[in-house]
Image 1 (cartoon, rainbow, N blue to C red):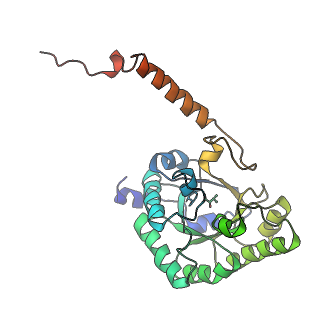
Image 2 (cartoon, rainbow, N blue to C red):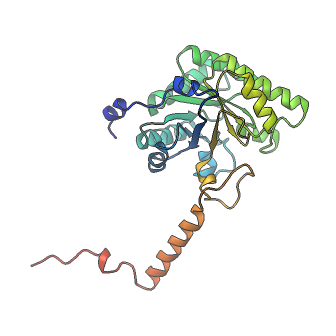
Image 3 (tube, rainbow, N blue to C red):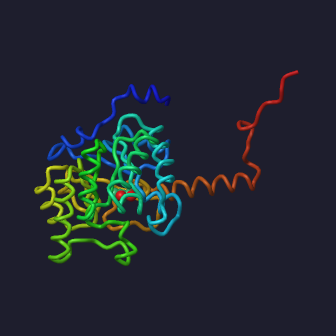
Length: 275
Ligand code: KIV
């Protein structure tokens, strides 16, 4: 789609998302490429270009090696493929934590070079000042509390949060800090239902849960997980399709046809030029 045409279509905006607090649940999924974004667009309110792209698409063990350039490339593709859903691009590890100025520089680059509507930061309490700095400078920010995948190295893996009193208090503090700093929505990952309910009741921004129960104001999943592309998924994922079997069956049939010289058949070859 041309840039002019894209500009003419009305996308869902950060204020639209914010207005959905306690309303119709927000439907969100991850997207990393144009054709998938085109397929998801009519069904979703928000498409997240998650830094999970590193693991889901690039085969990395975690999200730490994901770069800003990778996020921008995938963000551009998702913007090209969609025209209705709000597109939010994740700020990857080490591109926003050093200072508010670093965050502003890199977040504005993401907005400028992709045309997306928002960025997301994994938000420990220490990031609240940065969220405020960005929000005051007209950069729409989504926070991300609870299980923060970018902390996986420091924490020794992907661990559910809020399982004891201290951890519970910390997740609430993170969410309240992001809310008061001006995040227009907050992703809550990997917490028990009662904690998700308590946070959702306490913050003004809509909460978007992943492994955080139906008590949130919306839900998000990694698209490839919910479509069944992988053998293993976290327990909170429900599989809505079996993409792995469908792709494997298709590839097997193709390989058999090629080996048996059934493909290409008469329908798949160019006819000789008529003389
Ligand atoms: O990177 C990502 O895909 C995410 C979602 C899982 C919320 O942050």
